[in-house]
Length: 467
Image 1 (cartoon, one colour):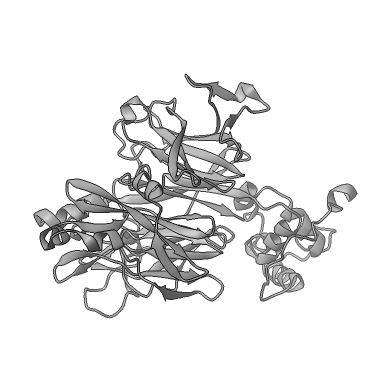
Image 2 (cartoon, helix red, strand yellow):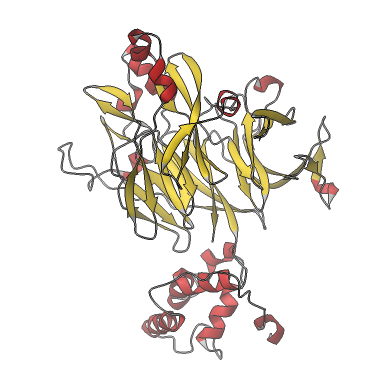
């Protein structure tokens, strides 16, 4: 026990500033214990300060059950002191969160990569809609907010053929992001209007709360985290009975819980179309956003259902607060622009993207070479069969310093696969434990770190939280 409690703490690790000290949280836990008729502290015979040190060293996957021990344990585990200690002693964990849709319901699932165990995230609160009068968004129905099953291609089709699917599915088209150790669900459609509301999930308390709303209602906006802030770019809204793309963008600071407007996306390539007819027909849309080398990369497309045309993209530099054109090779060759799921990720400073085109022959993974301004294939064929009934059988994510592929197999089993990447050579490295790997037709090695059968559910997005 003595050596366990004398774990060396890293003095270089930053400590978050909380509104109350560890002693305050100990007092809260003691007060809660007294309410339960408990008087011996968190762990009988030990000071609560030592008990918190012990709890902080327990894997987070155990916390949900540990909260059931007593009310004082629930208060302590849900409080900031345990997580401050975890960060201080280097026990912060990265979890993968996958958002899936089954029928009319969205469900978040959390994966602990260390244990391979899954934990289901609570449903967002259901708040009844009172009426459609413009009295703000305090009465929005959150259960509808998280129904983002409407694809943007279906919405764009409404511009052309006059059938807008988003009006049939309220709150469709919400977006998701992560910052400050929390998940965020933003915007979407409510009946006939794009909305501003934002919901936040905190894994420390395992609960949802309404957050500060965006400055403008938007659906299908693209979200990325940069410099500990959350950026919302573009999207669409309803104007005069029709739908219109948004050029506006805004940034969220979790420390102040405020949104601030930023320069609008120029969509410069869309401004030089040769005729007014094409300008009216072709709608410029931000197809994704990725943080890369301290800037936001926003690839773009022109939509005229059922046709899609790439128009490169633009890059936002927060240092100068300006937009500039994306290098031609980067934007025009950006893989998976129309996939509508998260298919790009940065590993060790290198930008990777999955190209699902020609999935019958297997998807490919590419890396962007900024010196040659070109996307280069690093995996010529993802060596797994995916579900033919799923429109979006792939997701990409980065955690634990490695690239991860999330894929849905032909039997509806979702697998999370890890591949180690060398940033200097962009080559795939074998594991120290090769028995865990499956050797494909190519000399690529894949490690399965988690599996789960989500049934007929489809992928919507994924995020990684470090807590």
